[in-house]
Amino acid sequence: MVDVAFYALCCAYAGSQALTSEFYGFRVWGNFAIAGYALASLHTGWLLARLRSRPGDTQLDGPERAQSRWVGIGFIGALAMVIPLAVLVLRRLTGVDWLITPGSWSAQPEVWVIERSASLLLHTGTPYVNVFTLGRPPVVNDYTPYGPVMTLFGMPRAVFGGNALANALTDARWYFALVAVLCVVATLKLMNFPKVPLRAAQLAVVFPLTTLSFATSGPDLAIVALLVLGCALAARDHPALAAVVLAAAANAKLNAMLAVPVVAFLIAARLGRGALGRFVLWIIGVTVVVNVPVALVDPRSFVEHVLLFPAGLGAVTSPAASPLPGHLIAATGTVGQAISFLLLGAAAVAIAVWLFRKPPLTGSDTALRLAIGLAAFALLTPATRFGYLVYPLVLLGAALTFRSSEAEAANDESLRWAA
Image 1 (cartoon, rainbow, N blue to C red):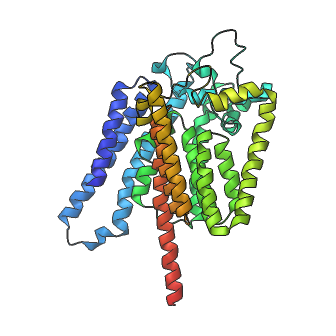
Image 2: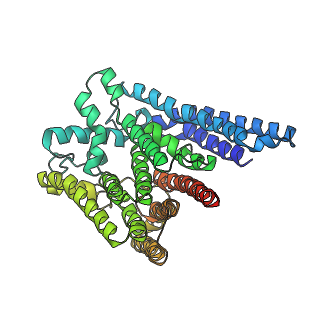
Image 3: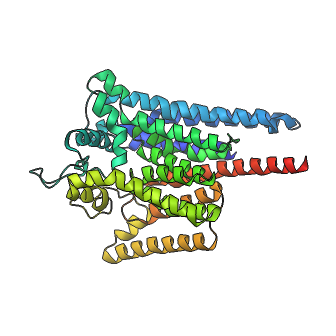
Protein backbone atom coordinates (compact mmCIF):
# COMPACT_ATOMS: atom_id res chain seq x y z
CA MET A 1 0.00 0.00 0.00
CA VAL A 2 2.89 2.37 0.64
CA ASP A 3 4.00 2.07 -2.99
CA VAL A 4 0.49 2.77 -4.27
CA ALA A 5 0.18 5.84 -2.04
CA PHE A 6 3.64 7.07 -3.08
CA TYR A 7 2.91 6.80 -6.80
CA ALA A 8 -0.56 8.31 -6.36
CA LEU A 9 0.86 11.36 -4.55
CA CYS A 10 3.54 11.74 -7.23
CA CYS A 11 0.81 11.53 -9.87
CA ALA A 12 -1.15 14.27 -8.09
CA TYR A 13 1.91 16.51 -8.01
CA ALA A 14 2.52 15.92 -11.71
CA GLY A 15 -1.09 16.83 -12.36
CA SER A 16 -0.73 20.07 -10.43
CA GLN A 17 2.26 21.04 -12.55
CA ALA A 18 0.49 20.12 -15.78
CA LEU A 19 -2.48 22.32 -14.88
CA THR A 20 -1.03 25.27 -12.99
CA SER A 21 2.70 25.76 -13.67
CA GLU A 22 3.78 28.97 -15.36
CA PHE A 23 6.63 27.07 -17.03
CA TYR A 24 5.98 25.36 -20.35
CA GLY A 25 8.52 22.63 -19.65
CA PHE A 26 6.92 21.83 -16.29
CA ARG A 27 3.51 21.47 -17.94
CA VAL A 28 4.91 19.13 -20.62
CA TRP A 29 6.67 17.09 -17.95
CA GLY A 30 3.49 16.98 -15.88
CA ASN A 31 1.40 15.56 -18.72
CA PHE A 32 3.85 12.74 -19.40
CA ALA A 33 4.59 12.15 -15.71
CA ILE A 34 0.90 11.68 -14.91
CA ALA A 35 0.91 8.67 -17.22
CA GLY A 36 4.13 7.25 -15.75
CA TYR A 37 3.08 7.55 -12.12
CA ALA A 38 -0.46 6.37 -12.87
CA LEU A 39 0.80 3.24 -14.62
CA ALA A 40 3.20 2.56 -11.74
CA SER A 41 0.36 2.92 -9.25
CA LEU A 42 -1.97 0.69 -11.27
CA HIS A 43 0.72 -1.95 -11.69
CA THR A 44 1.46 -1.93 -7.97
CA GLY A 45 -2.24 -2.21 -7.20
CA TRP A 46 -2.44 -5.22 -9.52
CA LEU A 47 0.49 -6.82 -7.70
CA LEU A 48 -1.25 -6.29 -4.35
CA ALA A 49 -4.45 -7.84 -5.66
CA ARG A 50 -2.47 -10.83 -6.91
CA LEU A 51 -0.80 -11.23 -3.52
CA ARG A 52 -4.12 -11.14 -1.67
CA SER A 53 -5.59 -13.72 -4.00
CA ARG A 54 -2.65 -16.07 -3.28
CA PRO A 55 -1.86 -15.50 0.42
CA GLY A 56 -0.21 -18.89 0.87
CA ASP A 57 2.23 -18.48 -2.03
CA THR A 58 5.55 -17.75 -0.38
CA GLN A 59 7.23 -17.30 -3.76
CA LEU A 60 5.62 -13.86 -4.01
CA ASP A 61 7.91 -12.66 -1.23
CA GLY A 62 11.05 -13.55 -3.14
CA PRO A 63 12.95 -12.21 -6.12
CA GLU A 64 9.98 -12.61 -8.46
CA ARG A 65 7.91 -10.10 -6.56
CA ALA A 66 10.82 -7.71 -6.06
CA GLN A 67 11.56 -7.75 -9.77
CA SER A 68 7.91 -7.13 -10.61
CA ARG A 69 7.83 -4.05 -8.38
CA TRP A 70 10.57 -2.56 -10.52
CA VAL A 71 8.24 -2.46 -13.50
CA GLY A 72 6.68 0.67 -12.01
CA ILE A 73 10.11 2.30 -11.83
CA GLY A 74 10.55 1.52 -15.53
CA PHE A 75 7.23 3.17 -16.42
CA ILE A 76 8.27 6.33 -14.59
CA GLY A 77 11.79 6.37 -16.03
CA ALA A 78 10.40 6.23 -19.56
CA LEU A 79 7.34 8.46 -19.25
CA ALA A 80 8.48 11.00 -16.64
CA MET A 81 12.13 11.31 -17.61
CA VAL A 82 13.38 10.18 -21.02
CA ILE A 83 10.36 10.91 -23.22
CA PRO A 84 9.57 14.41 -21.85
CA LEU A 85 13.26 15.32 -22.08
CA ALA A 86 13.37 14.27 -25.74
CA VAL A 87 10.14 16.18 -26.49
CA LEU A 88 11.40 19.33 -24.78
CA VAL A 89 14.77 19.16 -26.53
CA LEU A 90 13.01 19.03 -29.90
CA ARG A 91 10.54 21.75 -28.89
CA ARG A 92 13.44 23.97 -27.88
CA LEU A 93 14.58 24.12 -31.50
CA THR A 94 11.79 26.66 -32.12
CA GLY A 95 14.06 29.18 -30.37
CA VAL A 96 12.53 30.97 -27.39
CA ASP A 97 15.57 31.08 -25.10
CA TRP A 98 16.24 34.43 -23.42
CA LEU A 99 12.67 35.68 -23.81
CA ILE A 100 10.90 36.75 -20.61
CA THR A 101 8.15 34.25 -21.33
CA PRO A 102 8.20 31.25 -18.93
CA GLY A 103 5.12 29.92 -20.70
CA SER A 104 7.26 29.17 -23.76
CA TRP A 105 10.46 27.84 -22.16
CA SER A 106 11.32 24.29 -23.21
CA ALA A 107 14.38 24.39 -20.95
CA GLN A 108 14.84 26.21 -17.68
CA PRO A 109 17.13 29.27 -17.80
CA GLU A 110 20.04 27.46 -16.13
CA VAL A 111 20.39 25.33 -19.26
CA TRP A 112 20.88 28.28 -21.59
CA VAL A 113 22.98 30.18 -19.06
CA ILE A 114 25.41 27.28 -18.76
CA GLU A 115 25.59 26.89 -22.54
CA ARG A 116 26.27 30.62 -22.88
CA SER A 117 29.01 30.38 -20.24
CA ALA A 118 30.85 27.83 -22.39
CA SER A 119 30.67 30.07 -25.45
CA LEU A 120 31.91 33.03 -23.41
CA LEU A 121 34.80 31.00 -22.02
CA LEU A 122 35.90 30.03 -25.52
CA HIS A 123 35.74 33.59 -26.82
CA THR A 124 36.71 35.74 -23.82
CA GLY A 125 38.55 33.48 -21.38
CA THR A 126 35.85 33.82 -18.72
CA PRO A 127 32.37 32.30 -18.51
CA TYR A 128 30.98 35.35 -16.73
CA VAL A 129 29.27 38.39 -18.20
CA ASN A 130 30.57 41.70 -16.86
CA VAL A 131 27.22 42.99 -15.61
CA PHE A 132 28.68 46.43 -14.94
CA THR A 133 29.53 47.23 -18.57
CA LEU A 134 26.28 46.22 -20.29
CA GLY A 135 25.05 49.77 -20.83
CA ARG A 136 21.78 48.81 -19.11
CA PRO A 137 20.70 47.53 -15.70
CA PRO A 138 21.64 43.86 -15.31
CA VAL A 139 18.93 41.19 -15.10
CA VAL A 140 18.87 37.75 -13.52
CA ASN A 141 19.70 35.89 -16.73
CA ASP A 142 22.92 37.88 -17.12
CA TYR A 143 24.28 35.87 -14.21
CA THR A 144 26.01 32.49 -14.20
CA PRO A 145 25.91 31.51 -10.51
CA TYR A 146 28.15 28.48 -10.99
CA GLY A 147 31.81 27.63 -10.79
CA PRO A 148 33.95 27.16 -13.91
CA VAL A 149 33.50 23.36 -13.96
CA MET A 150 29.80 23.76 -14.76
CA THR A 151 30.83 25.36 -18.03
CA LEU A 152 31.97 21.96 -19.31
CA PHE A 153 28.36 20.84 -19.68
CA GLY A 154 27.77 23.63 -22.18
CA MET A 155 30.88 22.92 -24.25
CA PRO A 156 29.23 20.49 -26.70
CA ARG A 157 26.75 23.21 -27.74
CA ALA A 158 29.47 25.88 -27.87
CA VAL A 159 31.76 23.74 -30.04
CA PHE A 160 29.41 21.67 -32.19
CA GLY A 161 26.07 23.52 -32.12
CA GLY A 162 24.75 25.60 -34.97
CA ASN A 163 22.12 23.66 -36.88
CA ALA A 164 18.96 21.91 -35.72
CA LEU A 165 20.42 18.41 -35.47
CA ALA A 166 23.57 19.58 -33.72
CA ASN A 167 21.58 21.72 -31.29
CA ALA A 168 19.30 18.81 -30.43
CA LEU A 169 22.27 16.54 -29.74
CA THR A 170 24.22 19.14 -27.76
CA ASP A 171 21.50 20.31 -25.38
CA ALA A 172 23.25 20.49 -22.01
CA ARG A 173 20.55 18.35 -20.39
CA TRP A 174 21.82 15.25 -22.20
CA TYR A 175 25.23 15.75 -20.59
CA PHE A 176 23.85 16.42 -17.11
CA ALA A 177 21.95 13.13 -17.46
CA LEU A 178 24.96 11.31 -18.88
CA VAL A 179 27.25 12.36 -16.03
CA ALA A 180 24.60 11.43 -13.47
CA VAL A 181 24.15 7.97 -14.99
CA LEU A 182 27.90 7.35 -15.27
CA CYS A 183 28.39 8.36 -11.62
CA VAL A 184 25.63 5.98 -10.52
CA VAL A 185 27.15 3.10 -12.50
CA ALA A 186 30.63 3.85 -11.13
CA THR A 187 29.24 4.00 -7.59
CA LEU A 188 27.45 0.67 -7.96
CA LYS A 189 30.64 -0.87 -9.38
CA LEU A 190 32.61 0.35 -6.36
CA MET A 191 29.99 -1.32 -4.15
CA ASN A 192 30.19 -4.57 -6.18
CA PHE A 193 26.73 -4.00 -7.65
CA PRO A 194 24.63 -4.61 -4.54
CA LYS A 195 20.91 -5.25 -4.58
CA VAL A 196 19.40 -1.75 -4.77
CA PRO A 197 16.40 -1.36 -2.43
CA LEU A 198 13.26 -0.28 -4.24
CA ARG A 199 12.78 2.48 -1.69
CA ALA A 200 16.20 3.86 -2.60
CA ALA A 201 15.17 4.11 -6.25
CA GLN A 202 11.91 5.78 -5.28
CA LEU A 203 13.72 8.43 -3.27
CA ALA A 204 16.69 9.01 -5.56
CA VAL A 205 15.44 8.34 -9.08
CA VAL A 206 11.67 8.58 -9.49
CA PHE A 207 10.69 11.15 -6.88
CA PRO A 208 9.10 14.09 -8.76
CA LEU A 209 11.92 16.51 -7.92
CA THR A 210 14.36 14.18 -9.69
CA THR A 211 12.22 13.37 -12.72
CA LEU A 212 11.19 17.01 -13.21
CA SER A 213 14.80 18.19 -13.00
CA PHE A 214 15.91 15.46 -15.42
CA ALA A 215 13.49 16.68 -18.10
CA THR A 216 13.63 20.45 -17.66
CA SER A 217 17.05 21.39 -16.26
CA GLY A 218 19.51 18.83 -14.85
CA PRO A 219 22.57 20.48 -13.26
CA ASP A 220 21.61 19.53 -9.70
CA LEU A 221 21.34 15.87 -10.69
CA ALA A 222 24.87 15.85 -12.09
CA ILE A 223 26.22 17.54 -8.95
CA VAL A 224 24.48 15.27 -6.45
CA ALA A 225 25.58 12.21 -8.46
CA LEU A 226 29.18 13.43 -8.16
CA LEU A 227 28.68 13.76 -4.39
CA VAL A 228 27.45 10.17 -4.18
CA LEU A 229 30.43 8.96 -6.20
CA GLY A 230 32.77 10.96 -3.96
CA CYS A 231 31.27 9.26 -0.89
CA ALA A 232 31.71 5.83 -2.49
CA LEU A 233 35.34 6.52 -3.36
CA ALA A 234 36.10 7.73 0.16
CA ALA A 235 34.33 4.74 1.70
CA ARG A 236 36.45 2.48 -0.51
CA ASP A 237 39.60 4.25 0.71
CA HIS A 238 40.46 6.25 -2.41
CA PRO A 239 40.97 9.70 -0.84
CA ALA A 240 42.70 11.33 -3.82
CA LEU A 241 40.04 10.27 -6.32
CA ALA A 242 37.32 11.27 -3.85
CA ALA A 243 38.93 14.71 -3.56
CA VAL A 244 39.05 15.21 -7.34
CA VAL A 245 35.39 14.23 -7.73
CA LEU A 246 34.21 16.39 -4.83
CA ALA A 247 36.35 19.33 -5.98
CA ALA A 248 34.78 19.05 -9.44
CA ALA A 249 31.31 19.13 -7.87
CA ALA A 250 32.13 22.04 -5.55
CA ASN A 251 33.71 24.05 -8.36
CA ALA A 252 30.60 23.52 -10.46
CA LYS A 253 28.13 24.54 -7.76
CA LEU A 254 29.27 26.06 -4.49
CA ASN A 255 26.72 24.31 -2.24
CA ALA A 256 28.49 21.02 -3.01
CA MET A 257 31.41 22.30 -0.90
CA LEU A 258 29.29 21.36 2.14
CA ALA A 259 30.12 17.72 1.37
CA VAL A 260 33.87 18.21 1.73
CA PRO A 261 34.12 18.41 5.56
CA VAL A 262 31.78 15.45 6.03
CA VAL A 263 33.84 13.24 3.71
CA ALA A 264 37.01 14.59 5.34
CA PHE A 265 35.83 13.17 8.69
CA LEU A 266 35.21 9.80 7.03
CA ILE A 267 38.71 9.72 5.55
CA ALA A 268 40.34 10.79 8.82
CA ALA A 269 38.41 8.15 10.77
CA ARG A 270 39.23 5.35 8.32
CA LEU A 271 42.73 6.20 7.13
CA GLY A 272 44.24 8.73 9.53
CA ARG A 273 45.78 12.18 9.28
CA GLY A 274 48.10 11.42 6.39
CA ALA A 275 45.24 10.46 4.08
CA LEU A 276 43.25 13.46 5.32
CA GLY A 277 46.15 15.74 4.45
CA ARG A 278 46.36 14.31 0.92
CA PHE A 279 42.59 14.70 0.54
CA VAL A 280 42.74 18.37 1.56
CA LEU A 281 45.71 19.08 -0.71
CA TRP A 282 43.91 17.57 -3.69
CA ILE A 283 40.79 19.63 -2.95
CA ILE A 284 42.85 22.81 -2.75
CA GLY A 285 44.94 21.95 -5.80
CA VAL A 286 41.98 21.23 -8.07
CA THR A 287 40.17 24.34 -6.83
CA VAL A 288 43.17 26.55 -7.57
CA VAL A 289 43.77 25.06 -11.02
CA VAL A 290 40.11 25.45 -11.99
CA ASN A 291 39.43 28.91 -10.61
CA VAL A 292 42.58 30.99 -10.78
CA PRO A 293 42.86 31.26 -14.60
CA VAL A 294 39.23 32.37 -14.89
CA ALA A 295 39.42 34.72 -11.91
CA LEU A 296 42.52 36.45 -13.30
CA VAL A 297 40.72 37.35 -16.53
CA ASP A 298 38.00 39.32 -14.71
CA PRO A 299 38.23 39.15 -10.91
CA ARG A 300 35.25 41.42 -10.29
CA SER A 301 32.90 39.39 -12.46
CA PHE A 302 34.12 36.14 -10.92
CA VAL A 303 33.29 37.36 -7.40
CA GLU A 304 29.97 38.89 -8.52
CA HIS A 305 28.71 35.73 -10.22
CA VAL A 306 30.15 32.92 -8.11
CA LEU A 307 30.04 34.40 -4.60
CA LEU A 308 27.89 37.51 -4.27
CA PHE A 309 24.90 36.63 -6.46
CA PRO A 310 24.20 33.19 -4.88
CA ALA A 311 24.49 34.81 -1.44
CA GLY A 312 21.90 37.45 -2.38
CA LEU A 313 24.52 40.23 -2.31
CA GLY A 314 24.93 40.87 -6.04
CA ALA A 315 23.78 43.82 -8.12
CA VAL A 316 20.64 41.76 -8.84
CA THR A 317 18.81 39.81 -6.16
CA SER A 318 18.73 36.05 -6.62
CA PRO A 319 15.23 34.84 -7.62
CA ALA A 320 15.58 31.76 -5.39
CA ALA A 321 12.63 32.38 -3.09
CA SER A 322 10.61 29.22 -2.54
CA PRO A 323 8.41 29.41 0.58
CA LEU A 324 10.58 27.18 2.74
CA PRO A 325 11.20 28.04 6.43
CA GLY A 326 14.41 30.02 5.95
CA HIS A 327 12.92 32.26 3.27
CA LEU A 328 9.64 32.75 5.14
CA ILE A 329 11.47 33.76 8.32
CA ALA A 330 13.87 36.08 6.45
CA ALA A 331 10.98 37.71 4.58
CA THR A 332 9.64 39.16 7.84
CA GLY A 333 12.40 41.79 7.89
CA THR A 334 15.84 42.46 9.29
CA VAL A 335 15.19 40.53 12.49
CA GLY A 336 13.84 37.62 10.47
CA GLN A 337 16.97 37.58 8.32
CA ALA A 338 19.14 37.47 11.44
CA ILE A 339 17.05 34.64 12.89
CA SER A 340 17.28 32.70 9.63
CA PHE A 341 21.08 32.94 9.59
CA LEU A 342 21.24 32.05 13.30
CA LEU A 343 19.17 28.92 12.67
CA LEU A 344 21.39 28.01 9.74
CA GLY A 345 24.47 28.53 11.89
CA ALA A 346 22.99 26.49 14.73
CA ALA A 347 22.30 23.62 12.33
CA ALA A 348 25.90 23.81 11.07
CA VAL A 349 27.25 23.73 14.65
CA ALA A 350 25.02 20.77 15.56
CA ILE A 351 26.23 18.77 12.55
CA ALA A 352 29.86 19.70 13.32
CA VAL A 353 29.48 18.48 16.91
CA TRP A 354 27.92 15.27 15.61
CA LEU A 355 30.87 14.75 13.28
CA PHE A 356 33.44 15.36 16.01
CA ARG A 357 31.72 13.16 18.57
CA LYS A 358 30.91 10.32 16.19
CA PRO A 359 32.74 10.51 12.84
CA PRO A 360 31.22 8.51 9.96
CA LEU A 361 32.94 5.22 9.20
CA THR A 362 30.85 3.94 6.29
CA GLY A 363 29.42 5.19 3.04
CA SER A 364 25.85 4.91 4.34
CA ASP A 365 26.61 6.99 7.43
CA THR A 366 28.41 9.62 5.35
CA ALA A 367 25.55 9.88 2.84
CA LEU A 368 23.07 10.21 5.71
CA ARG A 369 25.07 13.06 7.30
CA LEU A 370 25.26 14.79 3.92
CA ALA A 371 21.53 14.39 3.40
CA ILE A 372 20.77 15.97 6.77
CA GLY A 373 23.24 18.81 6.22
CA LEU A 374 21.99 19.67 2.74
CA ALA A 375 18.37 19.40 3.90
CA ALA A 376 19.12 21.93 6.64
CA PHE A 377 20.81 24.18 4.09
CA ALA A 378 17.85 23.98 1.69
CA LEU A 379 15.26 24.54 4.41
CA LEU A 380 16.97 27.32 6.37
CA THR A 381 18.89 29.46 3.88
CA PRO A 382 17.01 32.67 2.99
CA ALA A 383 17.49 32.32 -0.80
CA THR A 384 16.23 28.85 -1.54
CA ARG A 385 14.34 26.69 -4.04
CA PHE A 386 12.20 23.58 -3.64
CA GLY A 387 14.47 21.99 -6.23
CA TYR A 388 17.39 22.02 -3.78
CA LEU A 389 15.59 19.29 -1.81
CA VAL A 390 16.62 16.88 -4.55
CA TYR A 391 20.05 16.72 -2.86
CA PRO A 392 18.93 15.20 0.47
CA LEU A 393 16.43 12.91 -1.27
CA VAL A 394 19.04 11.46 -3.63
CA LEU A 395 21.53 11.12 -0.79
CA LEU A 396 18.97 9.29 1.36
CA GLY A 397 18.43 6.87 -1.50
CA ALA A 398 22.20 6.49 -1.79
CA ALA A 399 22.48 5.85 1.96
CA LEU A 400 19.99 2.98 1.67
CA THR A 401 21.98 1.49 -1.21
CA PHE A 402 25.28 1.87 0.64
CA ARG A 403 23.70 0.12 3.63
CA SER A 404 22.56 -2.75 1.42
CA SER A 405 26.10 -3.10 0.06
CA GLU A 406 27.60 -3.01 3.55
CA ALA A 407 25.16 -5.67 4.75
CA GLU A 408 26.04 -7.92 1.81
CA ALA A 409 29.75 -7.45 2.49
CA ALA A 410 29.29 -8.28 6.19
CA ASN A 411 27.28 -11.37 5.29
CA ASP A 412 29.97 -12.54 2.86
CA GLU A 413 32.61 -12.02 5.54
CA SER A 414 30.58 -14.06 8.04
CA LEU A 415 30.24 -16.87 5.53
CA ARG A 416 34.00 -16.89 4.92
CA TRP A 417 34.69 -17.11 8.64
CA ALA A 418 32.13 -19.89 9.00
CA ALA A 419 33.78 -21.84 6.20
